[in-house]
Length: 75
Image 1: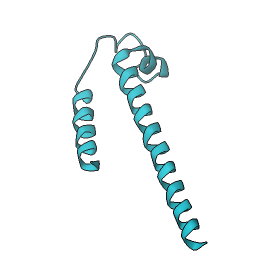
Image 2 (image 1 turned 135 degrees about the vertical axis):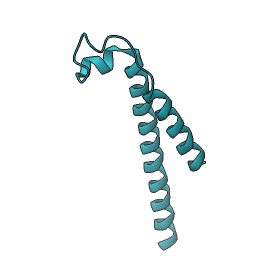
Image 3 (image 1 turned 90 degrees about the horizontal axis):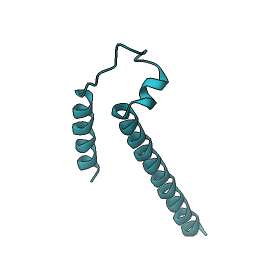
Image 4 (image 1 turned 120 degrees about the horizontal axis):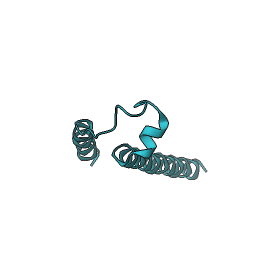
């Protein structure tokens, strides 16, 4: 499962890295407005934040379950 997700992530990152859009000469390409105002940047950014949030929450839930089992086992 993790290997499949990692492979998908690598393919998506490689694909998104090759996409260019017009307008890089009209505004500062490193400004936050450029990344949030252009869908070519905003959508992958939103997807990345969503995936990171899900993974962090999933990890916290797994750690809490593990700790509860350990506490119950020691009691």
